[in-house]
Length: 151
Image (cartoon, rainbow, N blue to C red; front, side):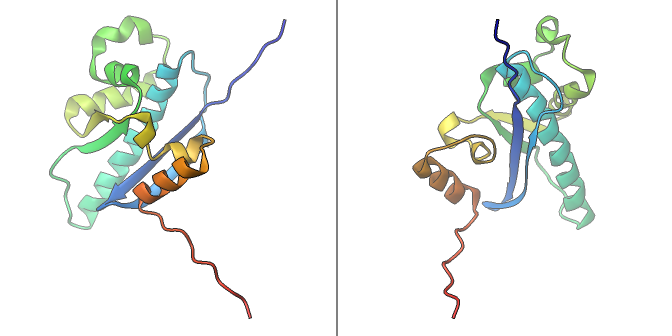
């Protein structure tokens, strides 16, 4: 019998005024039993970065007035983060990953569904077609480096 282990990666990108300011792509530190769980774990990581970014902005006297919006392309992960009724389905998930649920309840972050085709962070975690990569790169605010001619 063949066994396969899938390593999932988490990725996020934060933007201010349409420009990427921080991003991360990393193999997830634990095994997820479903795509929803893997996305939920990634949300927890993004929420930690959001809290750090909010504190940094506050330190430079630019206090965020609204929740930090985190776009997510998995409806089940959004439901897990918003609704504690799903506890029975998520009780095996490590407590530290429920950090996202706490931040949603506090109103520090807000989750918004984003179709997969528009998920900018996918360029950090998935193999994409050239056209899709270019589309997401443009959406991220990152620019292509010009071709320099060395003389």
